[in-house]
Length: 264
Image 1 (cartoon, rainbow, N blue to C red):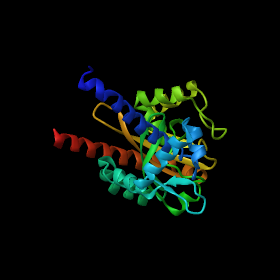
Image 2 (image 1 turned 135 degrees about the vertical axis):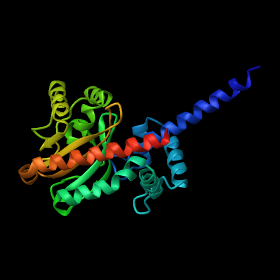
Image 3 (image 1 turned 60 degrees about the vertical axis):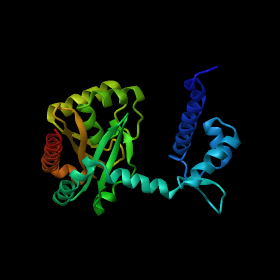
Image 4 (image 1 turned 30 degrees about the vertical axis):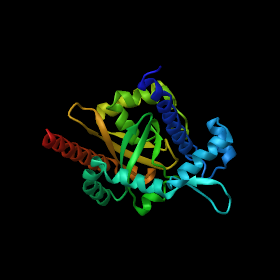
């Protein structure tokens, strides 16, 4: 006779597999707005009946919803609600809001707060300006680290992030995009030397940015603050933008250090 642990193990394993499948299903919607059951089954490599059960279960919780007009499935609004809660509860974001608003006012350009997520940069906050929005052809919260000033600033002071990008490779977005490990290492050394990072036409043509790392007490980046605008205009006053972003990043580093000190 098997033990209690033996009896329970297959159920636990099956449960974990179901959760993983549900998460894989959600990732299917990163690119596509709507998907049918057959398409979901094909992408997950499961039977249509399994895909339908997963979709039905997620629909019951508002994570996925079914279009009445097409019969296909899309991300549900409850997922948006959970995402908003997750953002609102990030201490780093809360402590940065006042200084980010000040930075936008002083610079006149769009301001971002970002962190490293694997081989990508994830923008936790974006405070746009009208002229800053005009040069951003496509806004996403996630981009490859090597394509943005924020990603460079984060990676220059976080060896794990830098290596993650090397392992993932260097997809090219424009003729100016970093496209090799040697270029990447050279650029990160430059960032460490000057204390800030820049990007000009490397993600999108005419789009420029400058970023500075927010460092912990070990000198490892925990975030980056950036100013983003049109290449021809931002470049005319780059020295001032560099000073502004460096000052903001330094202030946030101190704020986070004070929080750690209070907790200790």
